[in-house]
Image 1 (tube, helix red, strand yellow):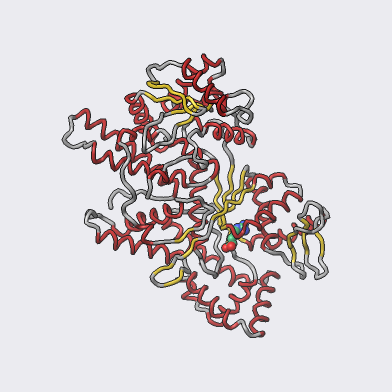
Image 2: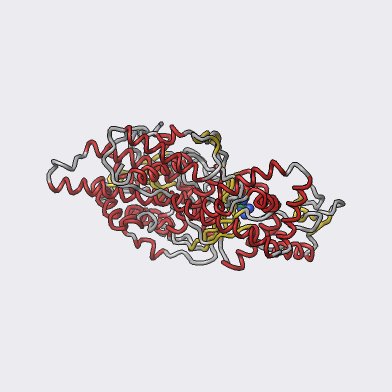
Length: 592
Ligand code: ARG
């Protein structure tokens, strides 16, 4: 692993994120509906922003601009393994009055030099230099270490989120829909990805003070239940349904699918589903048992992952409401009938049907997308959310695009505040037993592999509950492997790679304390694009630095004051590590 590739840095590889930040802020401001900027509260966490403040205040005098505008243009410099550049940078382009677009590069360089010459070092800033289009500031090392450590220890679990970076971001109500497996079908790795990604996004939003509703939208309706119902009557076992519903329903489903080749079974299944749609009590009561037992088991398994939901919803909730949606589409003149009798909505710009979405079967029943339309409208009525996020793999991108387009056509402007967070495919996840069918298979596999690794590692200490520890550490391995890259990238799954105990080593000790204060920008970046990898890279870097510090800065045997200071450093690092891991959905362990 190459350290430089894992360190936090902007996607374009440049080291002056200030214009990007100013841009992000503008976006955040534009989308704002509630709350407002509170400059006076910006520095409620004084120490964290005292550096930016202090730099801004000197700049403000020289440039005759309000310090608030300047603070936004000052950003932390990403860590470089090779050499220490600076701690903070001011991007000239982001403060240029005519915007960055028509400034020539040479011009910016010259302006940076001129400005740097007019600034003076003081008690906070120990070095000022000009870079390509930036003025660089190095903070007094002692002051930096002291301030950062004090801040981390004082803010505890709120370190980073209290930063002034978030003070202008309005608090919002967010609905996050994730995991959403299909009852009686396989729980594939895509559902696992959705689960851990959705959990991360929800954790992050909560940490930043947003109000979050976590919804699990189950695949709990459709023809498969006709088959399952018939299958259960033929091969079902009530005891097994109670004791291991997911496994049993899946077995029944596989069995009946084999049998469904013949026309008689197909007809029976159709009848069963028809009775469900007609609300036949007996049929529905069996379906409800499938659903209830499955949810019960899911809750137990999600608990192992540290994941919970506020609402178990599902497609079944929207049978009737989707008929209302069809009626609305008709009333608004959006529903067209094809010659085959299916209902479609024209999504093309020229209204030439070059793009459309099918929303109704020829027999008048609803489809996946119709139920999603009904669900979206229902959630708006129920939660009046500011933002709604759907987390699924990218194969459903078209589906969500169509969904949002239809909502827009129906006149729901909030469709613009719906977001599909998509992720790539994972290849090659297999357990020793073979293909992954249940979420529990993955959890058991990673736990047993981790236990084995722990047993063979010489460094493992006697621990109280090795199984639980193995589970938490194993899960951390899975989550980090999954979150290292952009969510949209596909990747090849590897147990060995995920469970490696060593990453790379070696970074300069002198950067250790300085690294800690960038956490707010890392959080900010993740909160903007909802990609966990910024936090992951940061935590990995911090871990490497802490490891180096651990070797070179002994606590034991040092003079009391020195020992105290060093302890502080490790305590701060541990605190930030714990906060970050919890956001990602990892439970920190204390022994391993
Ligand atoms: N149950 C679906 C599947 O497994 C995912 C549901 C995604 N959410 C939605 N609102 N359509 O593919």
